[in-house]
Image 1 (cartoon, rainbow, N blue to C red):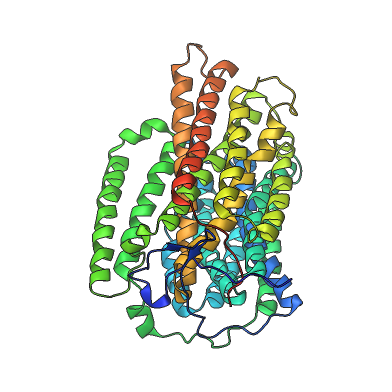
Image 2 (image 1 turned 90 degrees about the vertical axis):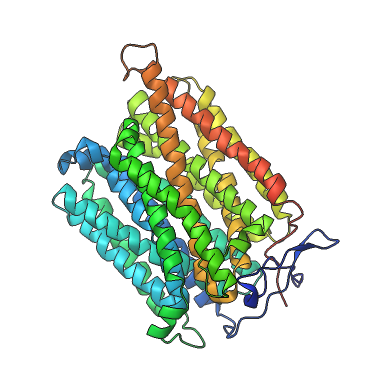
Length: 525
């Protein structure tokens, strides 16, 4: 059966600075007109389609795998490299920091120099820096290479989004590509936890980086040979780099996000560090840069010049709503899984391997959810899909907030881990389709940068606030030993309730922001 003609979310390409207001048709779908791409790709062979699916899923999966790996191997790694307690969480935090403040700029550059080139460069660099992490001989080297790896993945993520939109027209294959890209994240993270636990208790943590680098190199080679070249290759032009990118806006925003990410990363490791003059200065500077950015891009719009993220775009209720949803959902999802890692090791006193094996329901649930979403997203109303799936995910932090410490694994934690990823995985596909449709065809990598930046900042804020809540409640516990099970659980329960509040908030946002969105991901003729 042929696919239905689409009803689009995006403004015309010529209206980057002044997006049109959406109109709701009788069928409940959001209607706007998009021009066809200037140079459409010819129909792809099945082999090329498979390469694209494997490549974009694999590269995001490897990034998340490393995040899961670091979570489990961190205690052993810190001991082997004499990592000071003050920077204990930095092997994870610095990666997120450099990635988060590079995404917007790398997306803008990819739209000028070519998304395929930027994607391949990022893949190559990620392989090199991941291998270097495994070879690091001291903590300074490890942190340095993790920071560079964060920049490398920032080259890949926005470009991967742009590759999907350039290779696949609106319809089922694009939907499935985004769904598979989304599956790579929870699956990769959970596999990283499992592999990290096994390697920590066996060959050693360095083997994890070697394995990840080897897999990433295979993906790079596959992408070089299998990713189709664009019909009209992008010619590198210094003039275009200078004139087509809003450099001041990108630098202002990247600096503000970098400072905020730094402060949140520091808070995650030590709540009292908020009183530090350095952190106060960073927070104040970031707070001042955000309104400066708003004023700058507003000026760019008035002068009809490139604006990195036009202020007018935020007047699109659906775009704004889905960005808020991503921020909240990713914050809750990441914080819940990270807190459960500490619960297993600090409260239940489980080994790294035992801890990692308990996360297996999460990738299994993620795979099933993403496959179903990729196949069905164009058949169901997007607002209902997001609200229903996020309501299911609300049960995850609720279950772990009320669980008994010594209760059987299958009673609370198994269903919590199974349900935790369902909402974020559904939202991943919906939000990518919405955000890429809101940007013109020529700035799809920037659209990918916006999505990944919102998700990355959401993760940082969610984890930092959860850590602050858990630490504060634990310190206020009436138990004299703050490392005792009761004191720790008081903190963890409070943090889990906070995660439930974040997840529940997405329901309210979706009811407002996604109402009347209708079906998305339909074929456009």
